[in-house]
Length: 133
Length: 472
Image 1 (cartoon, rainbow over the protein chains, first blue to last red):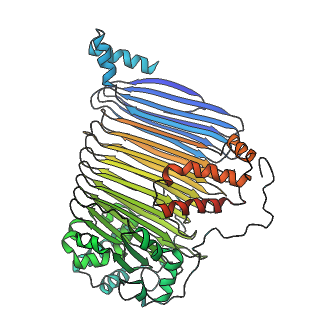
Image 2: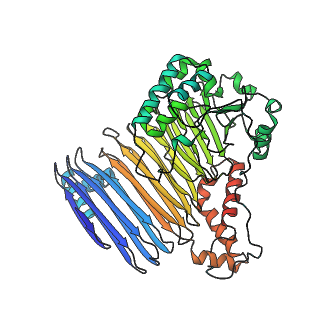
């Protein structure tokens, strides 16, 4: 799936054994354009997520602000992810940045919630919910 | 156009910013014909009196080179004419141990580059390569007494066959890519470093690569083995004269870092802007070892170079610090690769690039974490500055995570020099270009401070020169 948008927000869950490809392309060709793309995803057991995100800022597109964020939480066993955030900038009067992170649930957070009486699964679900919201 | 005030460039600054652009008259013992074929490959091997296995290795690599297509990704390489290049130029009979024995025109070159002077003060050993061969080599006696080996690669093939056959081409086989194959076929010169167990080499070892004639191809081959719990810092510098035709530099560098060892490899690439710089560099790091690539890319017409670290042992650590300055007519496609194969491995990539006067700088990187690399962590930071509207900056990172118990962070920003910063500095009495140079130097400071002293001064000076009277 290729999404051509400058502004886009998406939270998704890659279910067990699923493979999801998601590509975003944000083109900025006029001065003053602003955009923000944010993808948050949780990958369950055996799931695979391939993310690609491009920000293109064309010549003479001054005063542009562009941002792309890709956040992935690998939850299940054997879950996998690829994140490719890309920038092609041909104008100098711009602010463009991207950030990608791939990680797991922090064991300390789970420990804390368990100490409050939640089961491990409940704690995990709560963290996932918070991550995606 | 200046953003604030007229830049004072009364006497038009026509100062060439490249001070190593001089060339010396050609005086070669042997100059191969232009172009490449099996005879040239066999002849290079014969001239070097190599053992048979190396001749076979070269010929096989040549076939692989023919079979591989030109890479179509990255920078534009379509203008390289493999038939218009000299593959082997032999300047002197043997490697000299004293500068006095080096022929005067070659010695003059290195004097101008300041090598013998630096050797006295800062370095533990020096290799100087001129065209295809190493013309000068030295190593402080206390180091050779410790069993450290620092010689040209050619010499190592003859003198240390066990080490060479064990490691040569094992990390970067001929089939790795087209230019690794080309290097494997026609390699000449480069350094061989072996540091025995438990030895820390406190002064850096330095190699200096110089291309002198036009249409030259330089294909040095470097192999570094740092045995358990040892440390070495290897520094290389490169320059060439300015010609209207293009030269090619395709090096292969293999580094083996054993258990608990540490290697730092610093490159200051300042080729003239008619050199294609296509280099394959890779290090394999074992348990608790550390590999650091410090990479400065200032010169060349086109650079494609992605120093790689293969983290093969538990708790191995890789670090790549790179800075690229792309000016007029330059495309620097540089980056880094970290491949996590073992648990608890960590890596850090910091890349800073500056594009100006229509130059293009690209970061292209890979972080991959294999199944089983539990607890691996990686952090990538790429910052780019674009100084004018003719220039361009790209970021192409790939993060491939096949293990779920890991952490990866990637960040990149592209921006220009902030107007507030400039305004503040100008209100303090700096000219605009001075202020801008100051901001740029601050931007790359985290990497510059990792360089040996004489290089960090040089880098700051070069950036200042590049920017003089040109930006705003």
